[in-house]
Length: 296
Image (tube, rainbow, N blue to C red; front, side):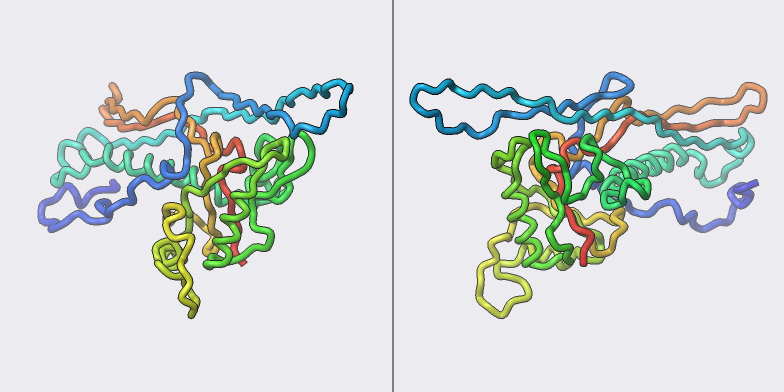
């Protein structure tokens, strides 16, 4: 009933399901790990603090490292299917039905992108409003992430700002000033600047221009090539922008079972069924893996 026109000759072209798609984007910002169980646990630990002065004759002070926060990632199953009558399959004049597996594959890829980028899209949503929280009980982007040994740290700009040369430089400085849970300096470096489509041209100018953008001075652009650029149409905040870092276990995509496709025929009705499914989970473990701002 949905495809009566496909039973008749005379249609010049079938359209609406052959658009070009983006290459995988989320894989450029997520660390992909394999899972072999229903859920995986990521356990945080600390190092040791700074050493102090020991006066002559005094005993050496002994301290213990701390057990840090624990992140649990439970794998979820994602699935989608479609079915047609045997008669529809037999009488289809344009081979449209044989394209259903390809359509399912496209839906799977788009679903992966959507759920992956929604981790960032929901990163500023407060816990009181239903925003997801991490191992430290804090939402992804916050100036109050908890240090295990005491204190807090931030992975958002001190003052929210649109993407400019100045704000990007401030973000890079904040990344390079990062500390661990004992407040020891860590060598954290930017990897990918993630922006929505609306500010993609501005981002490209900042990352590729030889001179400072938006300036009349002949200053060298010192942030040129500092990180790569990903323009994501799945980012929903028109002026929000984000920088991923080389922090281990930042944004994590966990694969339990890869995408698989299958087809079968119902014995009594002879209806043909197509399906695909996979199991995965995505979230963040260490918030130092991505810094961001919602824009001004």
